[in-house]
Image (cartoon, rainbow, N blue to C red; front, side, top):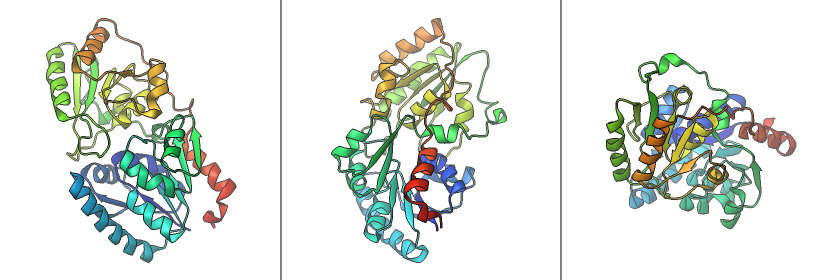
Length: 322
């Protein structure tokens, strides 16, 4: 029997790659530069159906259009279960078709997608601290794990330092700053804060090796390998979790709010939450004066959501393996 995996982002491509290798699967995605670049570089087979909208109107129109095209794909391929991370279109089709839905959404802050998907999931498999939030949106069965989604791909990644040799200067402090997902429907930073930060960080050219990761340009970077040589990460979203799991010494999350999956790590001072560029630059200056040591990676110290899924399938949905 074949599982259906609907991949919407680059993060999901990295995460679900290992699900597709373990379980017979059919993968769909949409026209979106970041996810397509990741899927191609990971050599994953997929069918591209629909587009990613850049504003509220486009998102609505493209979602309706994609639902119809996905329905035709579904009727042709007849998958037996859905694996996804907040896919509105795939959830609706699978729910009405009566097949099991396994949702790995880790961002209840993405309210619009969560309201349309959480109530339809057969099982939600989410990081510790997120369960109660998803219940508020109607989730019926939730399994929390003591970990983060990056555990799955970082513990299995093939690290290759040839991929980053032109990015790293071993004699300087390496700072990675990532542009916010300003086209996302959930709470995000605007580009102005990012641009100001880049301008200010460039003033430390003698002390730091600044690596700027832009979004929506379709550029591939071996981020897991890069993070093993990174001293400071300034970002929002999934790269915060990747940096944490990788043992990056200073991680600064500049999202306006602290995401539920990161709250406990902020309380434990493993992540710094700073929302103004003045605060962020202050932390960078302090690190330059007094560098912190790398933390031990958390790959094998936290629960792997893929292994949680394996257990769920074996114990409750073994018929899907027939």
